[in-house]
Length: 477
Ligand SMILES: Cc1cc2nc3c(=O)[nH]c(=O)nc-3n(C[C@H](O)[C@H](O)[C@H](O)COP(=O)(O)OP(=O)(O)OC[C@H]3O[C@@H](n4cnc5c(N)ncnc54)[C@H](O)[C@@H]3O)c2cc1C
Image 1: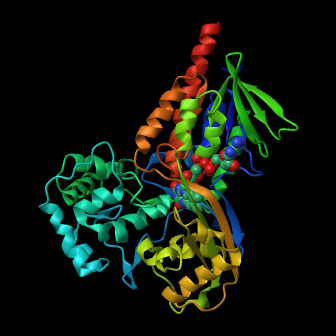
Image 2: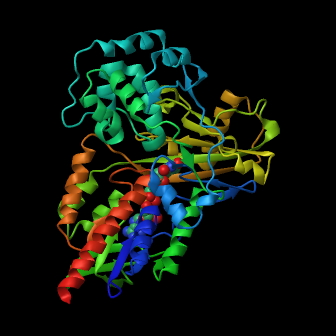
Image 3: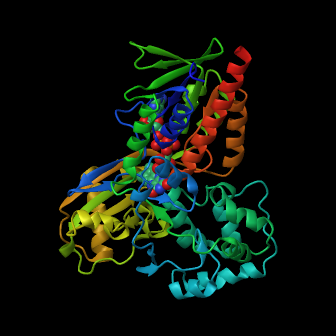
């Protein structure tokens, strides 16, 4: 295998993870990252002297891939878990505890739902109709809002499901695919007339005592890419930054990549290529050789968002928050509906107690702004976005003091939208790519945008490349 050269385009967590598998299997690997730094949506920097993530901050610990990677890097013992996962939702003019007994906001426990007072009396009264309504067809795919709204009423969609999905996709329940964004619930709903019954089944089937839900590294999840890159280099691979790939063409049974500016191009030949970039650049790169995949990739839309991080002295809080944060439904926060724009608040120093070890007097708070279709909100200056975040905390936590420091991290086109038809689109992309020997795709655009899912897609891509290279080298001998 050592004679083969594989190029991985994109130095986010997917590209680096794929490169690591390839390098450790003896393949000569080059990672080409267009920006000046590796990591993509994983980035950490200090604010008021403590490391707080600017992008992804929590890795799901209920899937193995992220934890396994950290373990394999010899850092498993370093992993830290949230001090609390209790969260709230701003609904009907007040912060209310998120109701227990739900799956991605779809309620299984109607008493807990009533006690939370998240829904209006009319909205709450509508929910149990699900138990008597005839079956709701969902064909190949439907939107989250149309299926869940038909079963449980629009308020469940607006005030529970969409805010939770918004935390993952920054998307709209009217557009997001039921099958792609809630696969477990959608599968259960195929065999259960009642959605409440289906979700009860999903909850009953989940193992108990699963341990912590989330994990991160003490220096932030943004520290993970460098650990992976170091391992790639230790295994003989190369990681280049500032190397934007502009073109991918077939050449002598392998591939030729064009890197850098048109006036001064550089060419790199490879036996195999993993494309681990977001859908738009992946579409451009595949346009010449795999147009069927490129067309489908061009149809995947992205939401932009910004994270405003504010670092306060503890004394700024009349009462320190107890929970990890809260969500604000679009019906309460959408600027087009008169809201202020913040869609989620994370009390980072409460959620991650290790942050207070650095400086017990600093409370870092992350405010997320921007959903799919709210791009105008993000056209404001950093100072204006910080002011929106400060006003939010003043309103809900009574924090009127100025923060010691603030930071705005913008994520233009940060989150792929798994809209209705996503699974078919991905199947078409995969089929077109599978027909090309020595080519694979990986990353957030396909089968899950969480960090563990990206690592899983990277491993699958690397396995495919290894199989291709093996059969090719076997044929040449
Ligand atoms: C604000 C925010 C918060 C999030 N929070 C969480 C969270 O808490 N938990 C979680 O699990 N997930 C979270 N996510 C999602 C998760 O972080 C991402 O889906 C995941 O990191 C994407 O990894 P990736 O490698 O697929 O893509 P990316 O991170 O986008 O990496 C792709 C890389 O390719 C590079 N590139 C693009 N075009 C080219 C080219 N032509 N040539 C060379 N390089 C190129 C880019 O510069 C980039 O570095 C969050 C995402 C965002 C935006």
